[in-house]
Length: 255
Image 1 (cartoon, rainbow, N blue to C red):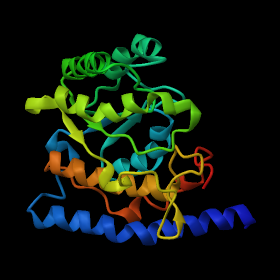
Image 2 (image 1 turned 120 degrees about the horizontal axis):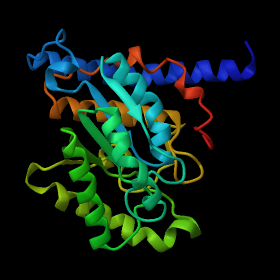
Image 3 (image 1 turned 180 degrees about the vertical axis):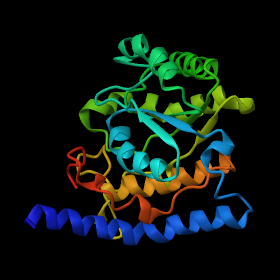
């Protein structure tokens, strides 16, 4: 075993140890509530999840896909590096393909993690989020917004931080009345960018992306939130997905 392989294996073991208890607690909670572990995700209409977002979401898709597969739920990610957004730069190009991608995926749930490119006025953001809602519900699926993790903006993002800060309230307005769901991921990330947690890299040193530990913590949290929204969905325990090799992916950098 080379030095790289040894490092990856050690990282995977650490992830397994860190997340195993959390995953088991999630599973135990579901069982204690009287939810069936034999009917699986399909009993809740959660047979397939379509994941949308930018390059942050690309990294998160790695453990999320492994976890949903282990939970018996289909998963497709169309998160895109340098885009993936429904408003702001590149969104026109994205919208040329997005309706067909959503239809073709045949999802029960579309999860859109608000991107770092969701720039625009409140009116532009609301129109785009409403368009996404109409597109998703038009194929019989449910839309879940997830707030983006806090970032260290730098010169590139600094001019757009007011727009990005506004995205949560705009999504909540679009989702009002139960039309969609907005999940506040500050439960995972806190209110400010934090590169390390518990002495380990949680977010990339670039101030934007996640590290394997952060992506895994996010996955564990999102599984729990989906279990609340779809009571027949029982998340797989962390040992079934945390040590499956995804943490070595090149998308994780600055960790």
